[in-house]
Structures are given as C-alpha cells and as structure tokens.
Length: 93
Image 1 (cartoon, rainbow, N blue to C red):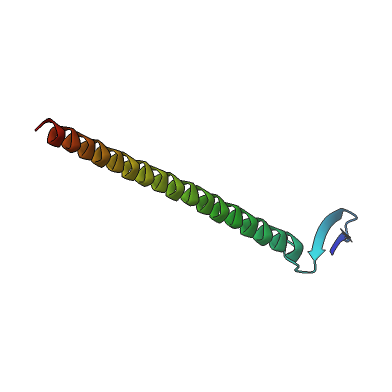
Image 2 (cartoon, helix red, strand yellow):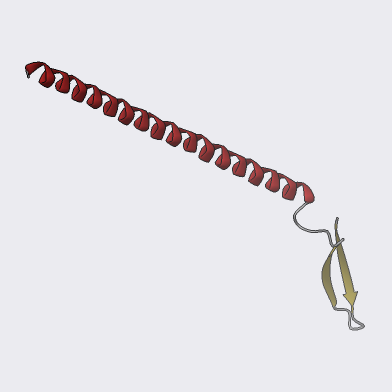
C-alpha cells in the first residue's frame, strides 16, 4: 500500500514550503504470484527439454539398430554368395 503525505510549513515571515512524502508498507515490488508463475514456467521449459532429448535419443537408437540389422543382413547375404560359389567350384571338379 502506498500513501502520499503533503506537508505545508509556514515560516513566521509568511513564506511557505511544501514537502511531499510517500510512505509504503515495505512490501516487495514483486508479488509472490509472479515468482510462482516464473518457477512453473521454468519447470515446463525443463520438461520440454527433457522430452525432446529423450525423443531424439530414441530416434538415434532406432537408427543405430537399423544400421546394425542392415549390416547383419549384408553379411549373411555375402556368406550365402560364398557358399554358392563354393558349391559351384566343387561341382566343376
């Protein structure tokens, strides 16, 4: 709460002087509600960041698994080609 006090002082000679005093109750300029909203906003931002990293991390793992599976299939196909070549070579003899 803010209160404004205006005091006028007159000297014996007849001149006057006006002085204004503003009195506050000492409350903080930031209310508690603003601080709570700020904390909630920071928590939401942190949650979004954690979600984004976990989602991207899952995508990276899926990509790595797909590459590993493809490499395994290529290796298996190469083995089959090698076996077929060996069978052909054995049939020629």
